[in-house]
Image 1 (tube, rainbow over the protein chains, first blue to last red):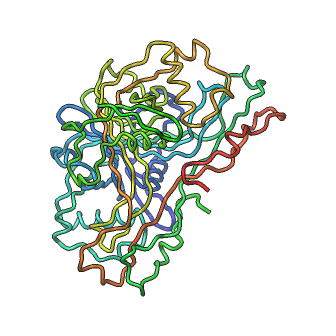
Image 2: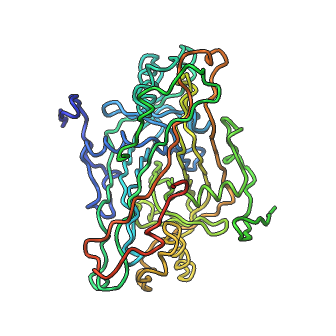
Image 3: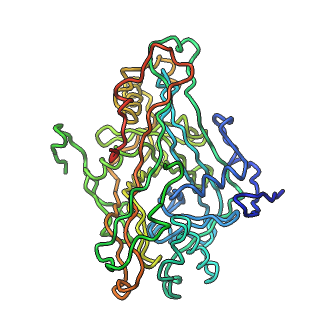
Length: 233
Length: 233
């Protein structure tokens, strides 16, 4: 099953993920969501992901930059470790994206939690070799972090594109988990004289800091001077 | 080798990690740090960690809450998945903690990056069974998120403590990677009329939101009314 949806003026197509034994969330299944719009919104908002893979028989988790194109997630091999690049073509990976939205303070620590939105993607990693796809992925990763930056930069040389490790994984096997709203305590605890509620958390950007070596006649471009993270006023 | 250091008025002892083949950072080794103070500061600042483990032969990465006591990292099994709790006693885990500090905009996307502080811990997970250690870990996790909360809450019953899955891992095999400061471009690119620099990022807390079911005579406690994340003004 595929669906076409209109979002912010663009028509896009995503492949919804049918739950598998791995993506069916077992604990608190009411928090599990298999709706593709929710999944893609979380992936698109997050600045980084955590890539899990097996190296020499043990698990390794590396943070890195990513970007999405349709139902393909691209992630950057270079800032990660040599271990990631040592992966075999088609190696199993688990990519987890997490946004923390708040501290949930229940009257009982047992019921305290966080408000969060997370996505877990299981799939086989593919090293992107085709130069055109690689440059596209390179552009997507750059634009994911700061829309407008690609055209306002010294674009990669063929040698640089060759030297950038980009991996891709299908988002067909993905699921999201979201917790929001107030805490839920045991019925008998609501009468206790204890505060309960949520401390909201969000990420904000501060005004850009010039490179000390910046040309004196170059100012901060508009797409960065008003750069804001989602929810930032 | 162990060292005693003074930090913020408290004397504390941590076991420094000697690099192993896993924690020796292979790419950009100048960003690798094996200093215990740096490692513990990153772990203590982060609200969540990502736990990687192997389930049925494939890698799984789950976000969860953690806390540190000396060179032991405790993490919470419950909000994670059934898969985490299915782990064998002593199973290998990789726990990664990442703080994102800024977008590093080089003139060339090839040199663009992020400023970040991350820690990777390799170790064998131990399920905490001793009730006393478990309650201590439960308290540490609660206090890690919001210092002062434990004493201002309805403390866990023996049944709740029993029902809370806490895992522990030694931080003996840990390393940190930190990137900070301005971008570094190729020498010939500094003359280009392109902006370069850093967009700083930080997490902030907003004023607490009362549980709609809060007793009308209970106000926000002081440790939450002025709750701030590091770097928040």
